Image (cartoon, rainbow, N blue to C red; front, side, top):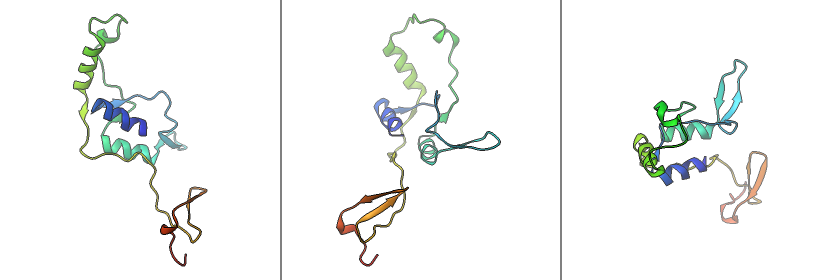
Length: 126
């Protein structure tokens, strides 16, 4: 997800859609009926940037018919950027966020792991 955030920031724009050749990190579960349940963080990213996954924007056939282009790479980039949407006003935190409780040993549990935190954050009597 962090790669998406950095790519969008680099270009200063957001594509209308993105095609993925391997969506394993985007899908948390495939249900019995074949429906794919999106990962929570990817759903948040998609909602924030408002792009469609897996739906390529139709291109003019002549654009991809040949490897020899009449336009420069810079010209093609400008064309692509013009088709993109502006970045949202607020940044997206591309990290998993969860509530936690620090115990008296200055440890917080996330998933199945314990992480140490500064003693100042340990709750007295917990």
